[in-house]
Length: 235
Image (tube, rainbow, N blue to C red; front, side, top):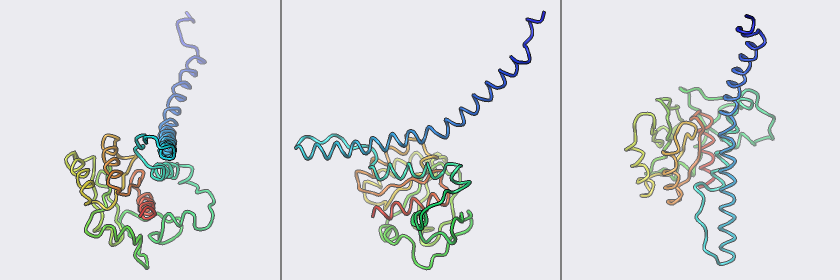
């Protein structure tokens, strides 16, 4: 009987539904981290405002948010900067806007350094960060799977890489202790390549010890440079 068979229209509808479901899932995977970052930024702003208002009215200050507004904003910026629409076709920008973020490590405008290539700045990049890292380590952490970028001097010796994808639970626990002991100059989190269970204790320890924190997306070369600039601005 004809009723026992799927009509061509029913078959087409099923394929379309499957295609829509797949595309919606991909869309949510791109948008959800942005929505979460916006919410985190809002909570950071509200927390800072609540603490200021409580202080001005001689009331007990509520607990501070996990991230400061500056760090939350930098995290949001990193996520937006990594959107494929921006990486494929960068929007026009005012002179020096993005160049300021990249700093002197970029040998040419819009050029992405290759994994085996380091920039050759005429002067030492990020001098405050370099000075703060004298005798201490600038720690970069994330599930890097061995994808460590070639960094220009002196960062090749200053940076300590911790790969959370290599079973480094002990190293992460020790890192929080080292941060509290003042043995870490700054913390760069590849937040798109690290779980919250690893990042949140480290961010809390860094905040308590007044150690600068920045985010580097998936750990790409330009994201790392932007994170260095964010830390330089905090010092």
